[in-house]
Image (tube, rainbow, N blue to C red; front, side, top):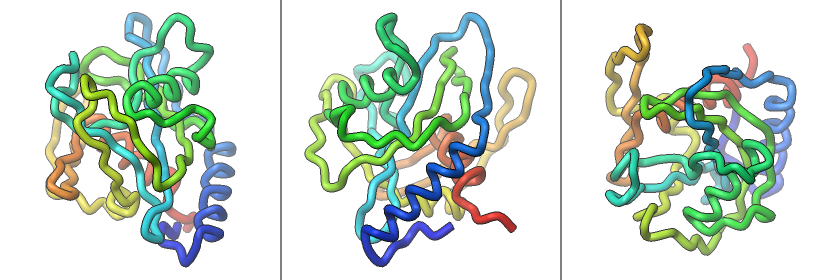
Length: 200
């Protein structure tokens, strides 16, 4: 699947294809009582003729994932209608993207974090350029990373880890002096594998 485009029209065709693929692919659902419900937004944007994803560098003030690269998102509040509402609310709180400025394409897979979170993944398109308004208590920087990095698995290294008795590959991607690893790298690698390759 092409992630480089001659113009905005080609990017719009890409988003339509991605939306169709998400619609026809049932997301992996995880049912695990006792986990904290949460959701992240996988925000895709058009920049320099390529599809990018917006990631954030978390501060050392947050409770979990201190100084790590993450997708915007967080825990579900009692008043949240659904996982989309959670992802959009948290994204607005963290980086200032208004919910109405996000075009939701669909839902990707559920994941479990080592910190006890049940993480739903919401995929959306955001405008670019955008005047991000970061919450300094939570976010140190916004990073726009080409999606091709994950589609092509251009990771710096991979290590074997064990979680709940199962072995997993943990990918470490380097971009712009930042290291993308852990659950964020896992979500983006799985997303690229499932949706960003054309059928054989």
